[in-house]
Image (cartoon, rainbow, N blue to C red; front, top):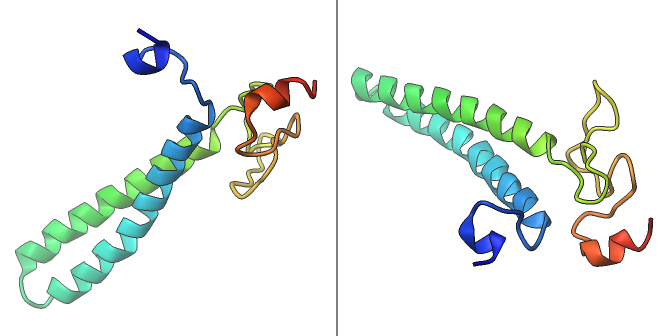
Length: 116
């Protein structure tokens, strides 16, 4: 069985991890305003339901910050450095190249390893 199929090894495409982290980041980012809007709609109707939605929104905010942190800590498949962090206190999640080696996002690793 190949490592990518067993779930315990390195994936065939190193960018799959970034895609998963990005989906998690976007999904939680969308869920927070949706839950807050829902809370404003049900708030006057039922105190208990409003509290339930408030707890769900709080959990979504926590999940959003966890997903954002996970996305920012993605390691470059070529150099192993933090892809989006050029330094300890700066982050650019919209970066299109690695902050350390210049690997372009979504570039196949076979082509990138020849670049040095």
